[in-house]
Length: 264
Image (tube, rainbow, N blue to C red; front, side, top):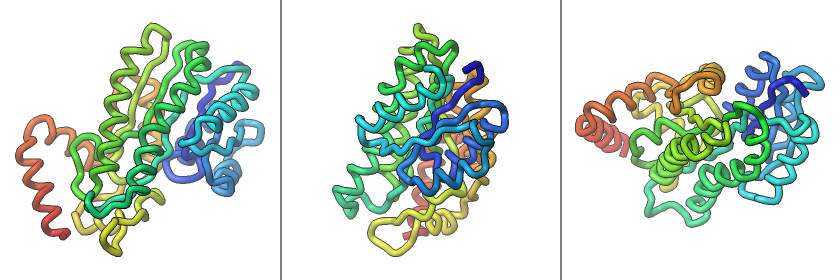
């Protein structure tokens, strides 16, 4: 296959679906991977026939990773230009009130799944000239978010992993990039907050932050893959956080603390 290729986790909705459509419209063959089979079919229905493959994948299952990558390679002749580690969940609430199951699942999907996917795809990425790993981090990986500390911690970890891999994999011709979006209009916003009846979406509204259209992330993903910046912020909140974390961290910490007090 002479066309470029991208393998996307979390492709059944949200950022994954938007990126699949955007890259597909620009000539990429797209591997759609998710645990939600019906959602992947919906994504596929918006794309050109013969320009995608569908792979059932639980990113916490290493065996499923190997099988999905192998099946994708059969369709692409062993080519993978981009691995987009995008699957994630957004469970939040006070740390002491979160269940062990929610903590373990958040870490397994948001961070360990990124590591396992990168390992599973390494050979194919190495054998594809100028390949790229694109990881979905978050604005919560710029400065820790109260009420989302486990989620935020995983996104900090993805940020560090991205930076390290860009150095470690450079001899193999593999670049590593991250997206750091602020709150995006996706189903993840409807995730619950432990210790109350509100959702992440409601917490955002109460804090006065904006929700960014998912289409902006697709455009940012394209630029992240084809340009030189390691981290690409998306949305006004992410850009403000990045600036404040660098230049006025004490003021940022106070403002976040005030927002949390108002919310509580």
